[in-house]
Image (cartoon, rainbow, N blue to C red):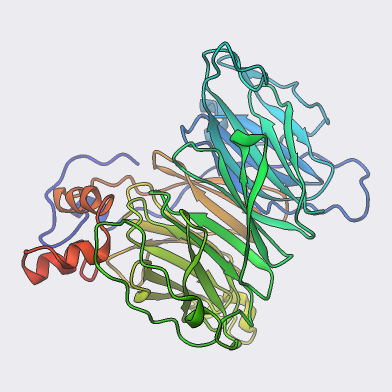
Amino acid sequence: MKGSAGEAVPGSAVTALSRCPEEPVLLAELKPGRPRQYDWKSSCETWSVAFSPDGTWFAWSQGHCIVKLIPWPLEEAELCKTLDRKSHGSKAEARSRGGAKEKTLECGQIVWGLAFSSWPAADSGDLDGTCAVGLACLILATGLNDGQIKVWEVQTGHLLFSLLGHQDVVRDLSFAPNGSLILVSASRDKTLRVWDLSRDGRQVQVLVGHVQWVYCCSISPDCSMLCSAAGEKSVRATELAARTRAGRSRAPVLLSARSLAQPSRRAPQALLWSMRSYALIRRLEGHQSSVVSCDFSPDSALLVTASYDACVIMWDPYTGEQLRTLRHVPLHSALDYSSDVHTSSLRSVCFSPEGLYLATVADDRLLRIWALELRSPVAFAPMTNGLCCMYFPHGGFIATGTRDGHVQFWTAPRVLSSLKHLCRKALRTFLTTYQVLALPIPRKLKEFLTYRTF
């Protein structure tokens, strides 16, 4: 899938070679072995998959209260065939690959959410024993059916924390990308909770604003914003179309308490929160059904939300403006499930590492790849019962999870970004939309930098 150099298309953020990517190819499929007799409440779905930030580990909630930790990359032979991995219940025993061992984590409850983070290197005065002195390590947080969050040390498989507070399923988890060990959890108890693992897992904030299940949460790469998405009949009624001031601060200006206290209107929504003050910034309305997945672009300049209404909406998180709507429609009559409104319901959306593509998984049995500059998919792959998707941090692969407890690895376009996009990405890493609009530069350049044109 590696592309060679080619000429950039004028006005485009992607080179000519990457504008027509190949269809995703299935590289490997991992399957759980025959499960043992578990409590009837257990289920087999793979609700979540995750790559570690450095791309050295892959985590997979394979159902039946089990998480598999697999060193990455897979061996060459594994990328050429479908695998059948047997689950034997061992917590740390497995093949060794370059010193790292595949592990099985017995979580005791159905696992819904997964999130990796690095743990800073310990010094000689650090006596908690989380990591070896002078060595950084990886941790994995798991969100469970009973409201617990269990945090594990990846290399050893040891349980580090059990975080208690949620009263229902912990549906999603997100670590702050800056390595601060701040963890945000989203739950069916209609709240988000903020935890500080550097302070022994202390709960530092409870965010209340949704009146239905919270399906997902995502912290922006610059750690200034948090997005949460929930079911229908969300909170705070009137359109919060407040305008924020341009300024030096990276975070948008917060709305007044009075404007947030308006009566509620029944409309699906995503909420944006400040990661500095944990105050509600604004809500994003536009979907017609439950919002179930969200993700920020690598430069924090874009936000995408996916819904059961079969649409992905691309937002400017600083202004609340809808920039684009990607509609999931049947490819041909053989896939026309329009008689059932739920067959095209979206399950997951994620940005590619360079920020030029999106991947989506929907109930119409397709994995789609979208280019940001287009309103229709550029590649498809048939998959059955898909629930989640995630890009490999360095690009080139997409992992998807299914209702059957399987995980599949697909090829993804390897992008040669244009110089224009690289410059835009670098600038938007530290400039808000309002700061860009205040620059003394031509209008068309402002439109490009704020993703009004691609």
